[in-house]
Length: 291
Image (tube, rainbow, N blue to C red; front, side, top):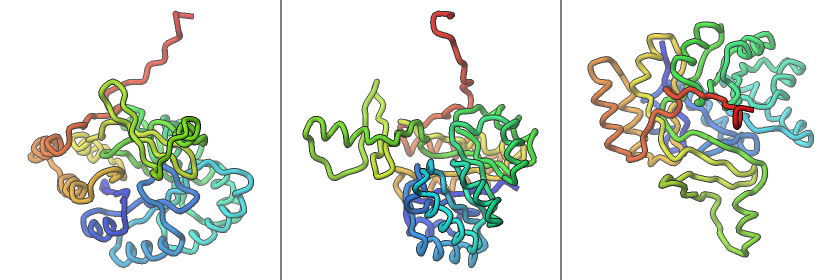
């Protein structure tokens, strides 16, 4: 059965959606990127307890590049997380795989390298290191997602709603710009306008992160994912009003052939920047000037 997983943007939203989804993905302070909100270890413990009391799954994103100076802190956090009843760690940096195996932490690991989780050969490689799940990239097509699922033994996570991360830099692109031109701002949330589209840029302690101008709406494709045994579909609340997002989660509930088109149209009416992402756009590499 395909499960519906939410990336929340507040503690209040977690409580509001506890009975409307199958689980949550949350971030941890200092070691998570591209999350609407991060939580302290103490807050995570409370969220895990709340989820388990309600029979919900809970996954922690530990998905930033790790510096050598951070390895000791990372190990301590992973040790604490290994004592909690979490269902998995979503990792980007390979140090997490190494620490999990060398320290016998027993964590369920989910390969989550955003733009790199694009093929079943690498999925099968990570399986040999004890990784049991993959969070597939939003840069691949619907057909490619189904093909990967058919050729791996891993559980699969797929994005079906929300803004998508496009670019990350450990440089402070906005803050450096403001400093250069002696401009002042107390925000870390900005917009860049290009060709009529607005892209969100977050510039925080971990660097600069750019997101898509449009919201992915994969509600139609959810039926295909369900038929092909995709394990988890993910709805991301980043930059989405809580009330609207709650309505979205409701629309993704009890989907079938009789109601999916009506619900898809409902989502289209709620936002003016909806699209299908890369679900039907193949990535084609071309050599410049045929060289």
